[in-house]
Image (tube, rainbow over all chains, first blue to last red; front, side, top):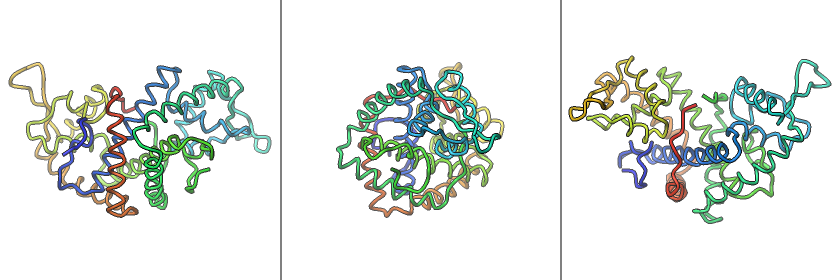
Length: 167
Length: 167
């Protein structure tokens, strides 16, 4: 019932299953494959985990840093997980916590100069990997896919789920 | 730079970022939102985790059961994680381990009658949720999206990554 070669989560489908269920399992398996490849290359190439890379990506264009709440929303994971990632990155001198001048009980997280330099190298490689992995699709097909996913996501945003944990 | 309302992983994009990177972050955020919603509803409605549901879904149409290796491939996770999920489902009498008649050192995992009954109820609800979550898109748009993702996945399958852990 799976018209692609790999026995994966799509394997359970039968011909009579609903289009939406087929689409969901294809969306899931495609994303998992892409994410696993990126995760593996980041680990092998730079010894960094995907959540740490993602967090640095959010900080790159925020010279004033971001609060933990903002980081949690953008990363789509719960605050406890963000704390763990920030702790690890701070130990490696990639980010630093900065106490808010207006509210001394709260703080922001900023990229350090060292973090910025390291991220720049990783981000260039990451972009090239993503371009390569998507290259089966033409530019037009990629734009079409982007638009369709945007419609789907817009619908989902009207009923937002809570942030998920990383585990 | 993000034309949708939510501040999430897409937020880091700039107008000059490559189409492939924009597409990748949209694919990822859409999948995470869908997965989180399904995960939450399974937990609230049936007290079951998503990996346990996914494993039962793979067993549903396999009266002879599946080996741990086959389960691991289909679930797209490593064997250690599969063992944990099977242990939990076995404790709840949803699945059982069956020793292979031809090789007594290996075994298969099968759904129990109780597991089959429980899964049937959950699968019906799950399918309705997925249909509802996808309903922003017309049938035609869903088929178009399915085809485009199939092209992308086909390209990825030519360079398969190793199975990922659940953590």
